[in-house]
Length: 160
Image (cartoon, rainbow, N blue to C red; front, side):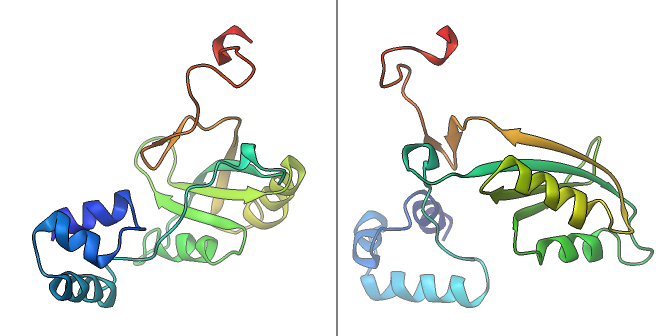
């Protein structure tokens, strides 16, 4: 099962037939395993990794650290789920260390992200502190490299 999940995670476009060959199993058995994992909520979905810098679409990503006050008897779950339900939010993760939650959002501009933090996150009763970090350039995401050592114009990023 673990090998199947790793293959799907690495390349979700592999067909059940291709997976069956790679796992030395019958295609019907692989389909059944995938269906079972989906039904149990192990497989949550499939996504493409997009390099937005190579498109003409304006996209800004930010990671926002939050210090929050957990609810008695419910811990961090209530505030985390409230934040996760917001349309702008891509991901919410409970963390150890200097802050409690890490929130990932995407928007069309830095201003949109700033307004989201100012109007939606900061006013929440359980949010004590925020720190917003704008992603300037991805180098690797989900195990996929985004940039070669040399940029298209021949300059390396370190020489800028």
